[in-house]
Image 1 (spheres, rainbow, N blue to C red):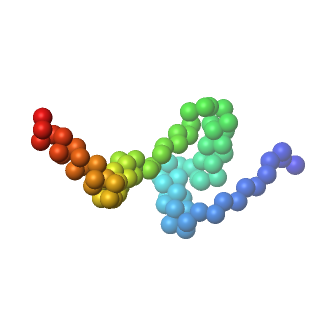
Image 2 (image 1 turned 90 degrees about the vertical axis):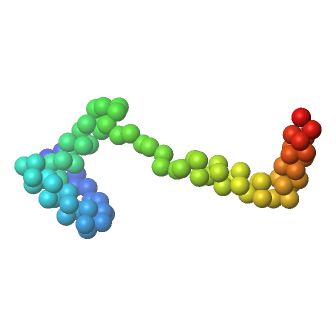
Length: 87
């Protein structure tokens, strides 16, 4: 008896089909690729890179826009504008 387990994943059907097709083109199968991935994942620190996909500019811009559209923001902008006229 082998010292192994079976792992089941739930992935979208179209992803599974594309993975099988690509694996066949490479002369392998997804099971072998998963074993390879897990082996590399455990042995190397840089196999997976996690990237943040949050667009910080949009979040920052939304906060700035909402501030300047508020009563407090408009009041402060008017003060700054008055000070600039006197410069």
